[in-house]
Length: 193
Ligand SMILES: [Zn+2]
Image (tube, rainbow, N blue to C red):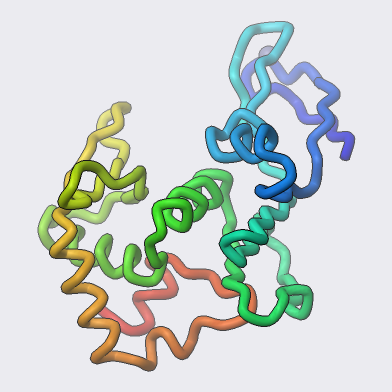
């Protein structure tokens, strides 16, 4: 798909060709460029500014039975095959985070619960993003921006297990997740405040 975005700094127009979807199983190189955000960034040849272009995009991973749709528009969930996890995301950052969560073999509903719990611990509402798990005990790492820098916060895997328990005791939360669901803090705030 051809796009003609304007540089955020100098306003110069630039022609870009970005595919509308990736199949993670058959296009591993493209998949990597989605996962590291490269596909959606472009450097302005005029002033050197690195721009982020958000475009509608479908991420399909047949091995993980996963479909992620990046768009602000309402989407029809009928294209999601039976047995698939379908998610709608509204930013490139959210798309990348979801890929990392599912690639780590984790459950994004539980991860959102972990973030909610971590906000209480941090005593501040910052946009936490899951980055990965580390070590034998599976400690999770989240990042958030503060004063122009990315701060990291490590969360023990016991928190993940505790949150899984909370969700088992509150089955209505997961029952609300179907089709192409949006699973984020806004969504979770319907259940926990
Ligand atoms: Zn520029």
